[in-house]
Image (cartoon, rainbow, N blue to C red; front, side):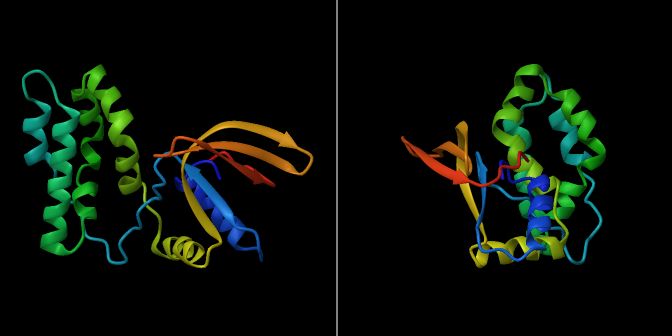
Length: 182
């Protein structure tokens, strides 16, 4: 699987219905899978009281300040209620305002540095689905590799992928029967 987002989860669910002996390898730059929704959801915590000063500051909003503020609010929510999700959910009505408040350079920073971390918290899996993904990890059916595909070459038996692993200097050759671009 190329990617570890919700599309990968959907593909994994389809594969999990079939008996299998081969492992499923998911390759993604950061190896982050979507978080799981709470089994007992709480309403979102309105983010506007702390968002407004960040979005209306002179010189425009800054990605680093937003990231720190979101992390603080999520930790506060976790400490107060045992769940970080209401802090994230409370930002939903303001997504367009947040994006509009970021200048072009800050948008680029967000996309480069924070997008993946935002997406795994914002676009979550149902608890039952999360349990299936976790079970696949635990029993070794699902293996996640961090890195990026450098090259792909079709062979008689499938595809050879050259992968540059995150944090490593060399590359790795992976042989796959199938590739699904997620």
